[in-house]
Length: 491
Image (tube, rainbow, N blue to C red; front, side):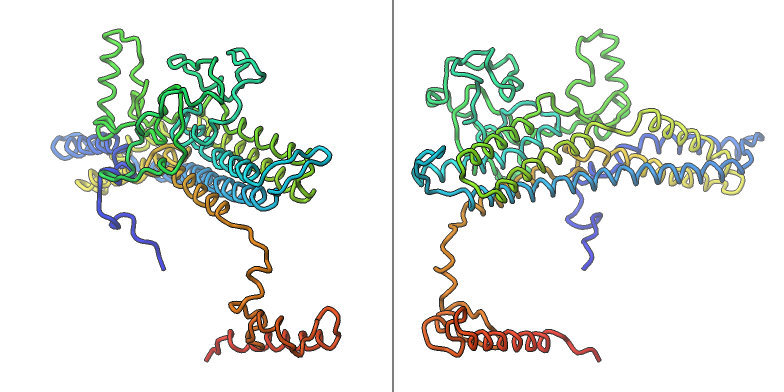
């Protein structure tokens, strides 16, 4: 069935209005409509006609239409590629978790390079590394949004147990890059503290993540470990607050002029959603590459498993390929987020469109009369809207209404990994040979329990050739029954 109409589904809210490009383009639409009004009134109310030949409009309109279409299509390709990359992260995380949870053994005895370890310790080890796998997607989310460091409510609890120093000495010079890149100078780490003394640190502060919906109590960070920390944790989601400049972006030019006149030290752009021209600011990628550091720990764990001879070669290759897939996906996402379309291309396209819309009312007045005003407004809305859409979805990793739901992707990965670790990995004989299983249906509807318990025509199949003949006939009959019952007759 078709999807719901996004314009009318769910009612209109300010958040949905912000997801459109109306609040971005309406000042320009109003400006060009004013030019059209001026041309119309001067031409009709005075003896001077401002109409010019319209041949140029046909040529420029066709060229601009093609270029704007290419601009929007290329931006949408980046949007789709970003979504595919997040699908790759989901698949790789799921596969890594399954291989670690199921194929890494719990029973470990001391032999060769393998040290003895209890079942409980092995389960703790595997679950902790699956938490690190989960942390990768969360770290990628913050990295793409330009949020540096590891001290976030949805990231720090998953990796706080990772080593902080290269050696036994707990000093600033030996701090590992994962933690060194997260220092901000405002909350320095007390290097005398070790992981064993973490209980002496202050408790985690109250959660500060803004709700997804007004009045909502949805707080997924409650499902994470409650750990100790030496500094306040930043919110899992930190979208820039909406202001009047999001709805009246042209006012930013007056704010910028005021800052210049008062010689303010800080730029108007600092901490803002938009620049002085009203364009949305796209945050830069994070300086500290936390996702890469996490993959290093995962690779180190894979090396430990192979040194200890705890994995079969195919599974070891699968884990290494999973880590490599995460690293490759991170590189592709970084490429999308850090490589905008060239400035010269964007600036020339926008200036060409402005010139075209500026000359449009002069060219169509002779044929449209008073309709020049709504015609110019509609053309401005159409062309500027498509151009703005291309700019909006070019980098789909932020908090805008049209961006990818990175928080939702991370929560989906968290749920799937928890589902993997909830699997008890039982012995197949405990559920295969029961009264619930009818393996040979529809030809033979006897249960597996009846088949293995009694004397049947199948006998002991692996030793009795006649029994195998009966099995083949049963399988063939099942195929015929399925072919007959599952193919609908077309009249």
